[in-house]
Image 1 (cartoon, rainbow, N blue to C red):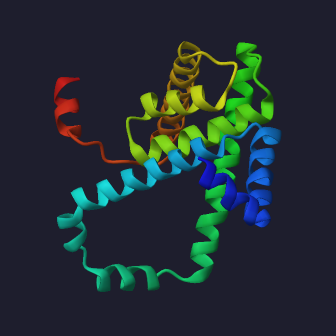
Image 2: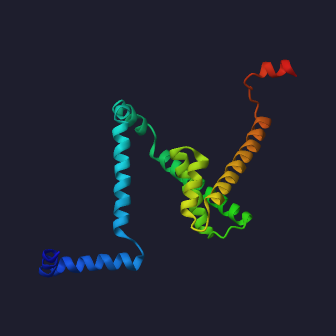
Image 3: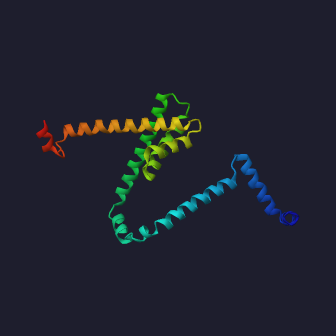
Length: 188
């Protein structure tokens, strides 16, 4: 310990950087060690997934993937990004409306951000209701896990209800051949 102190005394620039880092951590309420550990754990998790999936990754045909990506024009990429942004904005607004209807104490901007993140992450990792609930719970400091699950269930149910209405309208307007249509006519 004494040797360590002597090194720091002999190198004031190192001591000054340490004090600045510690002051930043305390001032911002951020524990840099915990943050670094969390990032290290995430990196190890990604590395573990890569190791586990290595056989599948090796089977990817990179030339076909590259050709498929090049077949999409730049304006199509821009349009896709634009529509994705509009979609996420709408989903965020959707969460804002539900928070208002449920009279939660959540900040509306936080509610929007939590809704956007919940949809994005749940669509990426799967298990929609479960993963979205955990994301909302994590991002909304005043929400309990039960409230997050309830909100996610309402979002999911209302999305499916709206989807059913739109699909029904399309089926009424656009002539569509129904699967098993002959069977349905025979029963009726």
